[in-house]
Image (cartoon, rainbow, N blue to C red):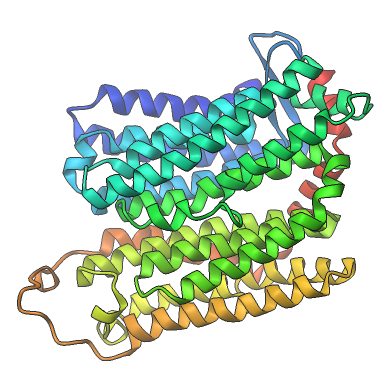
Length: 497
């Protein structure tokens, strides 16, 4: 069991090291990158199966008892996140081998990609606030270099904006950890939950929780802290954007859910009206930003923000059904959003651009790509029977039961505007007639193979359809995960026993 819990971290760490040692052997890097991502997915599935059978699993690194050592904890929520990380990681690795230029691949792309997956996996499995900060920094360093890798002017500009705001978030996170440790004397999450539940520390939990809310809000790109995301996510290669769009903001949402359900549940009750407003504002500003864009990756970047609003909505309502909806929504969105960016990369490979005004005719010449685009696009908008419909339905039902009618109305309007944005991409890139080619634009005339890029896109599209037509198993699992989050006694007992 201990090996299984540590396996996602050890596998990504080993893959990172091997890719670094094979710096001058690109084929070996590519092979090990695929093997490492596949192994991460396999161990994630095994870990989830084990947690479903045996309950919450814990490893105390070095056999130091909690709260003195480092606790690695796998409950249903974290195990589900490891599985979807493996799915996205494998898809992006396969896609990147054909899409990322050889210069970037030879200069550390695979090493950095698995370092990013290492930080993500560690964030999902850690049971310690300080180590959550450490894993966040691993992600930040790897993602910053990935955004800047290649040294193009637009990339460097986006990377500076990306890293500056995230460094502010990291500083706030570290300050909050210092406040907690200086007052309580521990940063183990289970021990913190036990001590903070006694509430003898007037004002301190509220202060620490408020700082963490801002720090995680920046990481998750919620209103009004989101402006770094659309300024940077469209600049790196599509494979980099896809994995960042799929995973990084969700790590921020995961941290918010974990911390505010486990440590600050009482204090969070006072902040829920604010969080309801933040959820609505995040949805609205994100979707309006997307409506004003005419470049596919910029549109999709703003839609990351609007969809984060739905996840925060479930956390703000904070009922069993709402949290189950948030867990379901996170899984759905990671798969769908990653796939949309990968499809944008195929469009760019075929046409040489993602500017909607320069696109057209893809439906007639590439019908398969048009159909593959429709699956995640309609799912993102919440069209039945795809996964996004069920994710939004669960959250809307939870909102209605809690009486948040204005928030539900906002969510429904945002869904319609999301459908408008997806329709805009469909009309401009796929349905309208192909514009006349500029004689100076020779890139569109060069035949380029897109079959290797279509393989992971098809995989993610199939998963979206499967989740949609058979949503009950994932919903049941999400409900069990929500029950564990709302009643953290099992988590505390498993860590501190």
